[in-house]
Amino acid sequence: MKQPRAWQRMLSGRRLDLLDPTPVDIEIEDIAHGLAFVARWNGQTRGDWPYSVAEHSLLVEMIFSRANPGIATRWQLAALLHDAPEYVIGDMISPVKAAIGPDYGALDERLTAAVHLRFGLPATLPPAIKKAIKAADKISAWLEAVQIAGFSGEEADRFFGKPDALILRGLEIRLRPPAVVRADYVARHEQLLAACTVQPPS
Image 1: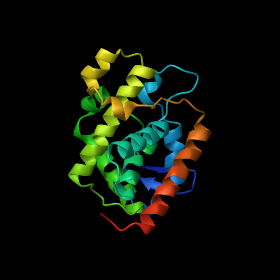
Image 2 (image 1 turned 30 degrees about the vertical axis):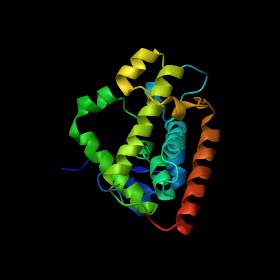
Image 3 (image 1 turned 90 degrees about the horizontal axis):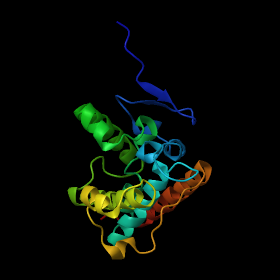
Image 4 (image 1 turned 120 degrees about the vertical axis):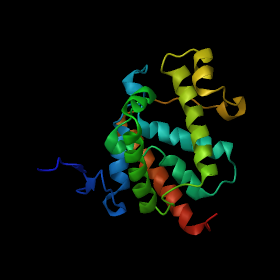
């Protein structure tokens, strides 16, 4: 019986096999393009532009770096790439992920490992780093919920936890055209990757 197609052709020309992804088929331009056109919150956000996963990723990396001063650049890069698999599998809200079950998580883990290896990170992050990135992700979700997704502060506190006011200071959700966000994502990735090559691993 013929197997269903499980790969996607990227604009770079790469052909990424979702069931067996390899680092050589991953390009940052493909990731940035895909994430810039994937809407967070299933598109249920205020404003004239969707709030993209690329914009969210930039915010998470900023929060992560602010909450962990002096952290190695490679872990900042990991924070930027924390949702990279969504460039091919999309952004599913938590209730949908729960309904799909463990298959979604396994697919996400395979893609994440390939992305990490492509850019010089360990396939699996150290637990402490993973936990710190998740904490930054929850702060970003709180901000998004309150500023653009229609949640009250009390609701956001209940679902995402009340964030530290010092971490939140000066942070504001930005809604920008996908092409602008895509360029900023690539630029930040290049900046962090270049810094990683001159900074000893830690």
